[in-house]
Image (cartoon, rainbow, N blue to C red; front, side):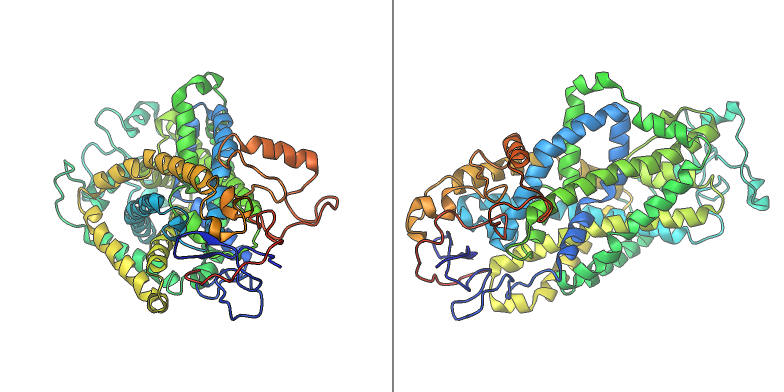
Length: 579
């Protein structure tokens, strides 16, 4: 009797069912049925996978991109297209990638043995992860630089009295505050307009960023010199990433207990401090006040879709990679719901943290919140640090903020590096490279460091923003669409390889994986076809978490279960050629 689906791939490239005791990479001689992959390894427990995936999805974009997009695209009204895109696009794609990786126990290249003609999709995922991994660690290294620079009594970007400042500099603090340490009073109205990025006046934080940290050149082609302090911080960043991944998921799974949870502690501390400041409510209202006319604009829906793609990490290859280390019968549907909602809730929560401080800064300067709102590096390294100078004990708040940015960045960088390493190791697939995986990780880390050196030059920020704007934008949509078509209509609907089962109707290749155990979804996984399954779920009484509802028919142990008829006919044991 067959009671499982064996995740082995025969020389012809098809996924075959095996006899009892042969699932998840086990060999024919094993007498005991195993749910683990002894060859590649698994997560220590399911919490490690969830925390790693949360750390992967929750990154810098949740803090420096979403709040600005929300404010710019109609405030609270932006939540409507955002959550529509989450439900009908984000969660289905997220679940599809998790189930795909968990079922095959392969990285973003190995999974395409199901349809070798689409292996280019896997290479596309690797290219996207490579691009992002290169510049993402440069952002982390800048956060490291600001973190180290905050270890001082007075923040270096608080005043205009530094050697790098120009006559156009106008700070939010009076020079007298440097000696008496008192809380700065509001500046006169005739000076407040000079403190924004208008006319020819610049803030001390902007001049610190442009003239001291970056020593920004005048053109993208003028690389100038490599900024040695940034280069040193880049080396520190890559060393940290390598050490955390030195044993693959066995070591990174332990690190994420801290890197994935502590940012929420810092966010809460900054939120509590922010909402107690004068003007914080004004900033939050600016963030949330709905402008319903905005949702009629196509650009708003486009921004919502791009933020969902970028934030959840769909089509990067990381979700497939992380899920490939799951146990075969893990409830990946439940995990996809938890991780997706956690990610989006974090984005909304971060908006309160950001705009409470920006509202306080706008109130202090006597200007509108829109004059101090920014996004991307401009928010993380100019606007927000300048607002922090207005707080008592400003170095402490600066340390917390940049430490949070470092942890958020590292959580994503771990998965980007592991995606590339796993793809290489699984593609080669022999015992030698499995034993030398640490050296592969080291090689990829060294290559990433070398490729990131040009981004630490005086023109590096130009190239960083160029890569950020184009590396993971429309390409993600193309990759996702091709992946959906190939899985649903090439792999899922084709009665190919009839030799893998008694009949094409019984093989797992004859249909797509089910969204819910016992609820076939032959219409496809992604986008709108998810709605009928959601309705069926409500009507049928099945529940997301086992044991939370009335008993029903005997449940399957996995959301990717054997096809109907898998228990009816024994099969010859196939040769195990991979995991």
